[in-house]
Length: 280
Image (cartoon, rainbow, N blue to C red; front, top):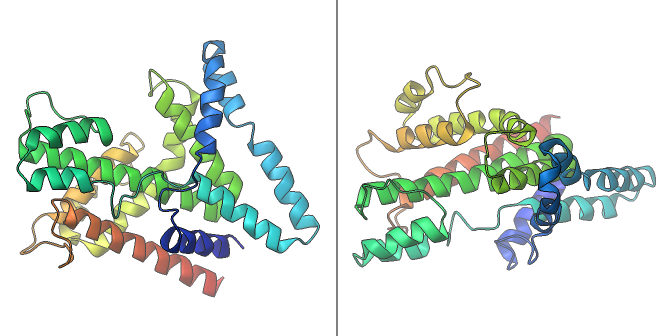
């Protein structure tokens, strides 16, 4: 059922104008609503943020008990679509940034990285090319990780409750003034730990294996290495050391090799999930 819902969502995002998810970001609206109780303590805020999981679980159970498979499929697809990333990392997310680089306007590229992509650039970079590309690459990788990979991972395992729970916790962590403190960031780190490592391993399979293996040494099973740090480190390793670029011939942007790496990694994920469904 969940795999069929995932296929339905992929089809809608590919064929319909839903590359950025639903027109209204319902999970973000709920987190904005719960923010008014931020002074009541992190535990209460987290419980309020996760409150929609209760009616969702009850509705899912009722539909299953009534054998309303079609409605359950539609509910699962709708929730997953609401939880997917709000940007289009494999197509238009960095288009303006790469256009600015192509015309040599590095100051505009710097503003786009910091404002549109929300990626911090070192203070001493001053619009120089390598730090800009590195910051934009990190934004691209993090969007795929948080907006797609982790969400789909928990959707496949736990269904709509898993996907919505992670999405709400991630949004709550983003809003916190101290994103490393409190129960929500710790739970987000736990939810991201395994999917991030599976994504890193997929980089090794579709990129330069030896370099990724060296980057994973000592970090693959480390609890202290964050998901963002691990994905950044292994993606750079997967793209380095080869004789040529991994980029597709029809993609000439500054981040073309990163997009190609991500597409290949996501395709590897899709093949594995399809095999599990066939064998399971």
